[in-house]
Image (cartoon, rainbow, N blue to C red):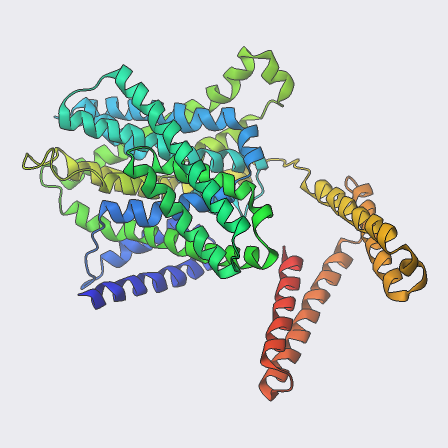
Length: 531
């Protein structure tokens, strides 16, 4: 039995890798492709049925995915757009839950309002992985990506809190708004506090103990699970614990990690996040037949109709929220108008259309209890809630995910981010600091010895090159083709040297360890060029 489960996991991991390569070939965002592929695979004969336990999804998948998202989020950017992020992560989640609750209560016979809020809490949070996997290859304003990533960090917590209150209302038949608001505040504040406490403990371990890159990498994998499980043990928000701890450690990472640790940790986490996301999205598709088989009280056509209506309402609610949420604060506050440039409607629409659902909605749906209470009746309409959730995930991923690149290209949004200018300015500042250090500490050698002179000249050339690029920012560059040819030559020279290393390795001309070090140098050089 254990061998069969292990084999299934290995087959899924291999399938994720193969299907992701195919999605790149077809230029389809891999979450969309994996969901559709998982559904297609599940329809094949003799494919084992996959059943996910709620605890597995929450504990195994959620903490590292949230931690990785927090780690890659800039705290400064997150705080800068805190108003927009809060309106989406809290305001829109609650608004969506309420609209879905009344819609489901109105269109589904015998569907009580408290179950409507439960369904709304499940499908209210968008999945940032699906959106950013589409946006990363397209030219969109940095503000759009930052808001979407920031929203995804917080909306998971708010939606899960709505979910837990709705489950409690169904089980007890009672709901007090004042008590719910107080509990909500407690869950949020204590969850953040636990994340920061554990984050500081992890910081001290990284900073003051004699760790190695492998130990540091292992600790970064342990940390999100420790934050999440500790917070859940005290019945507060594990999601916010992971997010707050991840943001803190990310902000202090330059103080605690060496270059080798950063290289190793980044590689390990890139692989881990890719596999976890891939497995979850393909499992969504694999589970759908099992859910359809559980629709005892409804025909498939009725369930599909309800699910499609709720999917369309979910999309419409987000679009109806983002425009007033963007422009009303500017109308009401002169301070905001003076501080922030008024965004055009096209980027606002992109934010509104990037509301694909995914991992958290799946986890929440699977976490709906089987029974109302121990020894009591079955939880009402559980199979229908699961089915609607799966359809909303599929519907939004396919419809919005496939059309999002088309909208971006249609709008032809002008991106005025000054990243290139900032990069050249930083290059000048760093090179100037290096020259000042050489002049202060090695002035005589720099004047008399060739090696020191060449080193100083190298940094001076970096300053000259960066200054020249800054002067040409707004001008058309006639040497673009020449630049591309030169860059291609540099990449070809890397390949030439790599082939020589292969010959030396094959002929045992140099020690294996030396070959591997030089190979790593070439890999880093190629990575810099391709970036």
